[in-house]
Structure formats: C-alpha cells, structure tokens
Amino acid sequence: MPRAALSDRPAYTRIRNAKRAVEGRAEAYALLDSCLLAYVAFIAEGRPMTLPMVYARVGDRLYIHGHSKTRIVRTTDGIPLCLTATRVDGLVVARSGFHHSMNYAGVTVHGTGRLVEGAEAARALDAIVDHLLPGRSGEVRGMTAQEQKATRVIALDIEEITMKRREGPPVDDTEDLQAGGWGGIVPLTATLAPALADDHVGDTPEPDSIAAAREKFSQGGPE
Image (cartoon, rainbow, N blue to C red; front, side, top):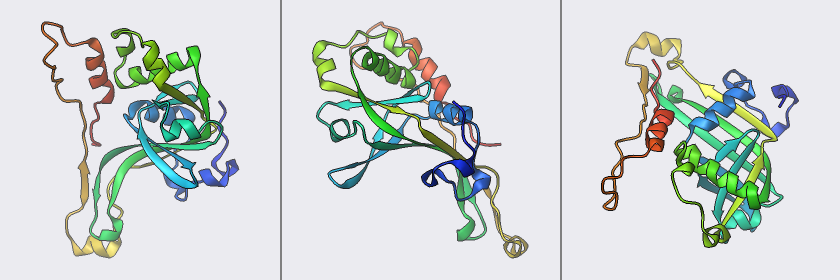
C-alpha cells in the first residue's frame, strides 16, 4: 500500500523527532515480523486499557486472539485500536543523566478492530502460531469444536503505521566530553535458549519449528 509522507498523515501519527522516523512500510513490517510480543491499546468501560498480546501479520492486516469472554474480544469489534511493538538493541550510556537513552526500533499501528470467524479465523490462528514457531501449525492437531467456540480473533487492518529508531553512541554536550568520563553503548542480545522437553516427549525428536523460531528471533547487538 502507498504510504503518505509524514507531514500528510493524521496528527496522532506524527513523530516529534523526525530524524528518528523510518520511512517505508516494508521496514516497519519487517520489524513487526521480528518481534515476539505487541501491546494493544483500546478503550473499554470508559477507561484506557493496554494488553500484551501475541499476534501475526498477514499482508496489510494484523491478527490478535483471546478467549471469547475477554474484554478485548468483547469490546473491540468496530472500535479504534493502537498496537505497538518494540525491539531494544542496547543501553546508551552518556556522561550526563539527561543524555542517557536506548538504541531501539519501534512500530505503532492504528486501525479498527474487526471480529472474524470461520475460515479467516482458522487461518489467522495458524498464522499466530506460526509467527512464534514457524511451521508449527503443520506439526500439531487441528482445533476441536470446543476450542474454536472458546476462541475469538480480531483483525486489525493497518490504516496508519509509523516506525522510529535510535542508533549509535550517546550525544553528549561538548563540555561533558571535555570533562572526561565513560560513554558508549551496552549492546543487548537475545536468543532462544535450548528447549526443555517435558516428561511426556519420550523419543520424539525436537520439531523443526523450534529451530526455525531460534533462527527467526535471535538478535545480535549493534556493532
């Protein structure tokens, strides 16, 4: 989908520090695909709510799911939603507290929730499983009728999406640099640890989806 220039988008999508804005929907989508968890914000019962949720992206649409009786499922059909996902790359250590920061990449999505059912919901649930463990939906049994009854899926069509990123060393004041002291970056790295089989595995080998997840979500710190 074409992406409007930052200056042409709604005010609620504007980024204060334009130097950190990342143009191009493809890069924002790549970040969504590389994050494990997102936070979904909505209004329910007159109050702002934020929930951590697993999700999946399929084209220009995101899917989230929950139990049929949960607040986010019961109240978000047809209402605005905001979803954010962030990857932290390191701590930025400056020579003053004011200039300490983090290196990160974050994406914010705005759209309207839509309850989905039937074949679309089934595909969405497979996509959510496969987002976390690529190929896992093909390694497990299908959902039972009772499980389907208990689960609901919300689609979030991506109406607006913004991405911002901070990279590089601290930006210290000249006086602080002249005064000396340590400054730099503490990189953050992430990887999936070796899988721990439960007591019922027996001789069953580790599924390919775990190796695929380890490759997908391994994160190296900045150089």
